[in-house]
Structure formats: C-alpha cells, structure tokens
Image 1: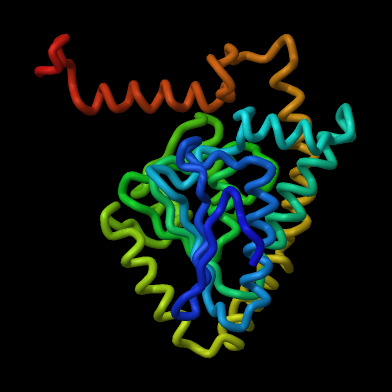
Image 2 (image 1 turned 120 degrees about the horizontal axis):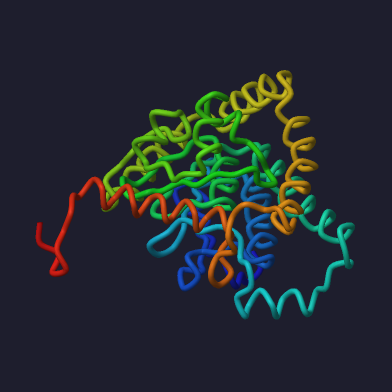
Length: 285
C-alpha cells in the first residue's frame, strides 16, 4: 500500500480497517483524503485477505463534513487547480461525490461504518455508502440536499422531508429509529462491538457475502437508486447556486461554516437548553 497522509490502513483477522485520520479538523474531508479513501476502499475490495472493510474516524468525530478551506486543502487545490467556473465545479463534485461514492457503495466486500460524534453532510455521505452503520450514543447526524443524495433511500421519504425541511440534527437514537443506523452502542464500546460483528461476518464464506451484497444492491438499482443519485446531482448544483442568490433567506455563517449547519447547530443548542431547564449564571438550576 502507498503511504497515506490523511487515512490509516491496516489488515488483520481478514478485516481491512480504514480510518479517517484528520482529527485536528474533525476529519474534514479534504480532496486528498477523498482520493486516498477511494484508493484504500478499492484496494481492500480487490484484496482476498480482506473479507470485511471497517470504516472509522480518528478522534472525537467521524467527520464534520467537507473541508471548506484548511491550509492543507488550500495547498492541495493550489497544486491541483480545477477548471474555472461552473464547469470545473460540476466536474469536481461529480468525480469526488458521485463516481467515488458509487464505487464505495458497490465495492464487493461488505463494508461497516462505526460513527461517533459529528457525522455532518459529507460525513453522512461517506457513512451511507457502507452496508452497515453502527453509531456511538453520542453520534449526531446532519443531512441536506448534498451531492450523493442517498437520504430518501436511507430513511422513509416522509421522515426525510420532515428532517430536511426543518434542517436539524438527529441523534443516534433517532437515526436508529429512522433506519439510518443498525445499532446504537455506548461510545466506549463502539469499536470493540463493531469489530466483534466484523469478525463474525469475516468468518462467513466471502463469495457468498459478496453475492448477498450484490443481490441487495441490484434490488435497489432496479428501483432506481443509481439513476436517482445521479439525477439529484443537478438539483444539488442548483441548491449550491441558491446560497449565493441575493434572496437567500439564511444569514451567512461565521468563518467557513455553511449557513444550514449554523442554523442546525443553533437549533440543537436551543433544544438542549430547553431540555436541561433554566440555569443561573453559575450553571445551577
């Protein structure tokens, strides 16, 4: 395997463990990270020693979404400029978030994601390419009309609309009830329990597991999954342009945070305050 700068890769007990490794930036998905993740997932899918792929994030968060401008990302883009204008942006988002994510979803090896902390926008996208998602009890998911728009397949359309119309975080319990995640696990035991499940899967015949995955993915594709993902990208492009429209209703966020993320965070903090009750300035009830 080549040396990676933004991920960790290890194979043991027939499990390829891939870790997003930018904890300083809450595993923000830089362009370099996405390319390295693509390489690692495809390599694991082609390696007969890897019967299961385990996808995790280093540190407190699985991923707080796309890298919107860290020094590392700015340096990478300066060294690898994209074509200017809408054409360049369309090409970049299609390659990174449609082509890549569909490849990850279709990698023949069963893939399991273990999610803790923030799983925002791009984090949701990466996690949703996995076949199984286990969540720590502190996981917080935030979706939107993002590039790889799998949400109507992750959860029931009416529940998806309820969540997206409001633009709110869902916690791990909500995510399990909605069908986004399979299990909710205490944070301290997340990796241990996920690894135990992965070892169980790895003990099965790998060809049978690949055929099971292929059959289920084909059933979704017969219902239009891949076509829906591809066609929704055009609506994402329009949605992205809408944020720059003078009539856009949300105030710009501070720093590089997307306006919808700021609104969702503000709503979450208000809900937490209501749940905990009024407090005086010293924090006492």
